[in-house]
Image (cartoon, rainbow, N blue to C red; front, side, top):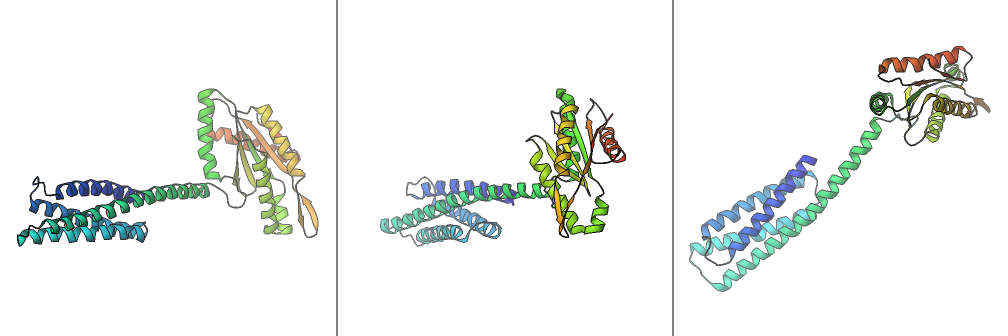
Length: 300
């Protein structure tokens, strides 16, 4: 739709210039023959009406199209009036002035319609941009937790590792997994499990800095990217998240149940393969589970 709107805008400028030129030569200056003026007006009428029909199908309001239609009615009336006058050899100054008034109304109507359509064109493009941004956000966001999804995680991870290598900056990754979550789902049901995931997602969003980003990696696993963060600071973030999660109770079946998490922390090594980076964080997370869960472990 944006391409069609842009093409329509080009036609708008062409039409405006053509109408202005033809109107200038309408006055009896003798600079342009009547037959050539008639052909020029007729051509402009056809272009304008085709454009009118195309835009009406696409996006623009009827009230602005009516202005163009009225302008073209004036234009057609004046054009054929002038043409018939030339055929029957009527050279009456009063009649010619009336025809010129018709041309004036035609130009004013078409120009007014064009101005309003240009404003609508800008608004339409702005609306399309907002809609595109909204759709893009939906495509990279996990519906349940409000965090980014795993597809966007890999895209962002690649960019952040390139930036960390280029500028020799720290980059840390946290893998977070809910402890005994399958047992929780089996005991209390998946609806209760979804409530836990939503609470964890909100907690992660509220705990991160502006440059950090959180992701639902899959199921009950989450990933957090911490740019400009070395392993010591990353461990501090992990401990703070672990403690906050352990205090996050969920009321189910008239009792409060607490969920703990195991976290693996890894700092990116310069020129490290992405898969190796992910595996180090993943192994650290599973080691935390093996050592008793509800803890954060720093990768080798």
